[in-house]
Amino acid sequence: MNEIVESMKGSLDKSSSISSGWKEFSILFKSRVVGLLLLASIGGAFLAENGVPDWKLILILIVVGGLSASGSGALNEYLEKDSDALMTRTRLRPLVVGRFEHPMWVPYVSILMILVPSLVVMFFNIELTIFLLSGAFIYVVVYTLWLKPRTILNIVIGGASGSAAVLSGSAVVGIWNDPGAIVLAALLFSWTPMHFWSLAVVCRDDYFSSNTPMLPVYLSVRQSSWWIMIHTLVTVFAALCLSILPELGVFYFYPILVVSIAVLYQNIKLIMCPTVDEARRLFHGSNIYLALVILLVCLNIAF
Image (cartoon, rainbow, N blue to C red; front, side, top):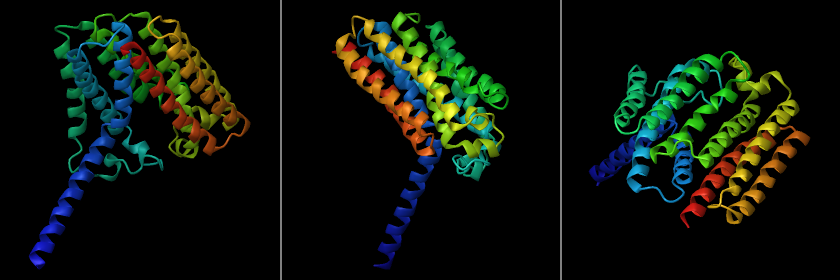
């Protein structure tokens, strides 16, 4: 009987260890962010195709886009592990607390994850390669290494990495400059500051203690809320502009109008009542908003 109990304990410990390991890798490779970027890229593919893209192209997009975005995310965490240690939100990330015995593998594996898929697809789709590498370069070099430690405008330019994800989706079907995909790319560009500055309001003290020049560190929460509103208005305008496309129309327009009013209302609430709780609601609301825009685009085109 004791042997059975010990065996069960061992199995549970092993299962818990595996679960913990997957969680650590999920955090390291920023799986949530990657999932949103892949959704955006699929939206770009649907718009450019003006229909449901070939499943093989979608599979290629998910594999190469997922690897490139995951590698960029892990490289970002490796480069920022010292500043992450100073912030409550990030101080338990695996590289900060030493979850990996030999973390020096992270930058090498990350660079391979970025370069290898991009170079492979270069032989049959050079535009896809350009947007994959552009997205990684903007996020890792332009945003993480250059702008983030130096200017409050860091995330404004850094938002271009999300635009590159959308255009990688339109590139995979061979029409990278499709007007609808370009509008969606512009939406991602304006959505990123709206989304991230809301989070920066929540983590204002963290960014101050880590000496990171985020906008809400240098401005009051109310002033930051007005800057967020500018990007919210541009994001909503871009989302509503997509309804001009004949393949979307009123079945896209009315649901997006409703959720656009909701996200604008939440931003107004943040201006009127500049608190961490309101900023957190806008942060989560911005995630839902972007996901709904892309899902409605894909559903309306597909059906």
